[in-house]
Amino acid sequence: MDSTLFFLTLTISVSSVPWLVLATATSCDFPAIFNFGDSNSDTGGLSAVYGQAPPPNGETFFHKPAGRYSDGRLVIDFMAERLGLPYLSAYLDAVGSNFTHGANFATAGSTIRPQNTTFQQTGYSPISLNIQFYEFNDFHRRSQTYRNQGGVFEKLLPKEEFFSRALYTFDIGQNDLTAGYFLNMSGDQVRAYVPDLMNQFKTIIQYVYDQGGRSFWIHNTGPVACLPYILDRLPITAGQVDHIGCVGPVNDVAKYFNTKLNETVVELRKQFPLAAITYVDVYSVKYTLISKAKELGFVEPLKACCGPGGKYNYNVKVGCGWKGVVDGREVEGTSCKDPTVKINWDGIHYTEAANKWVFDQIVGGAFSDPPVPLAMACHRQ
Ligand SMILES: *[C@@H]1O[C@H](CO)[C@@H](O)[C@H](O)[C@H]1NC(C)=O
Ligand SMILES: *[C@@H]1O[C@H](CO)[C@@H](O)[C@H](O)[C@H]1NC(C)=O
Ligand SMILES: *[C@@H]1O[C@H](CO)[C@@H](O)[C@H](O)[C@H]1NC(C)=O
Ligand SMILES: *[C@@H]1O[C@H](CO)[C@@H](O)[C@H](O)[C@H]1NC(C)=O
Image (cartoon, rainbow, N blue to C red; front, top):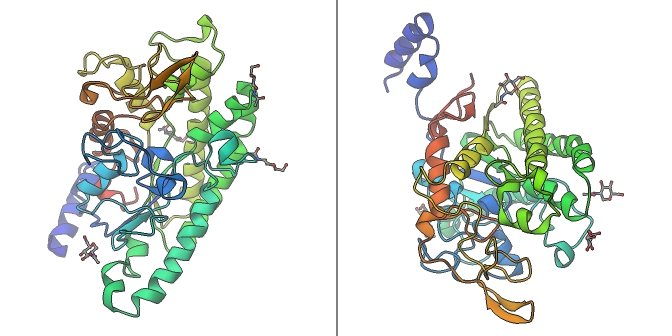
């Protein structure tokens, strides 16, 4: 858009209808995405380190395992598509990666706080958010050293200017909450460490800001207590189950986390007036999807598509794509007939169809604060 025209549009809208300002703002043309998170946005990190997510993961879209815990694309993939960028390579993937338009530091099982248990003990990734930042920091510095050598590096690594113009995306926290529950903590005990999670999260945003990051897109945490792995593994009493079958008190802790996250974002905006920080209420979108599954064309919202059978088609000992023995019987975690009508993929993660639905709700800004569309998330309110 011609800059005079843009200024005119802006002036008219400011004086007449202020809320139009955002609508008439130009697209940010994000040249890159740098993502931090857990399995909700892991495009290959954990697979690179601990072995590939086995088939049938990836069956719907990639037609083979693709480092994602889903039958297809994740919300972060739909975001990259919409911004006209390639899918993000996992930073930890040593072979076949292309980082010209960003990098993904997320790994499945990641937490904000480093855990005091090993991956073998509890399945939480050692690549916690602080480690993801160390990786990013190293990537930023080394990518430029190599890019300056020219040749193939120019076709594999981002330009320096991309770091300030990129969209920095975050989706992390779910595992910090479940880690406490799986250690048999009470809801109050989990709540008690949420402020510590917020402090550590805030520190990482500060570090990224110090490296030039200005546009942040932060997902809150989903209704984890609607997922089979929680329904199956936590001791639940009938009185705790809400009208759609989720565990009310556990989701309340997720909501508490989100309230604190929102407060943290408000503080960060004050601290960094030059940053555009968008808070995205993914919780509400996912809860609506699960509670209105039928109206939206989905079936059995609380039952996994890929699993070894049972009430929720989930068993902690036999994951999607694995074989094992349950109650003396050999079972296999196999896919359902039609993942496109299912919400839950493997008991923990969402199907591509569900991810697409979630993406469609959030991309325009309807669940964001401020209500900016994805492509305009560099504009401060
Ligand atoms: C791990 O242990 C340290 C030292 O006791 C403690 O400060 C930290 O909060 C613990 N982390 C978690 C996730 O429990
Ligand atoms: C990496 O991806 C970019 C953008 O898609 C492309 O232009 C570039 O050629 C790719 N690099 C290599 C080495 O294939
Ligand atoms: C939590 O409690 C269950 C049931 O009492 C027990 O089997 C499990 O070992 C406990 N887990 C931890 C980490 O203490
Ligand atoms: C976040 O907090 C602010 C300030 O308290 C409030 O106005 C806003 O509605 C909250 N946003 C969400 C999504 O909860």
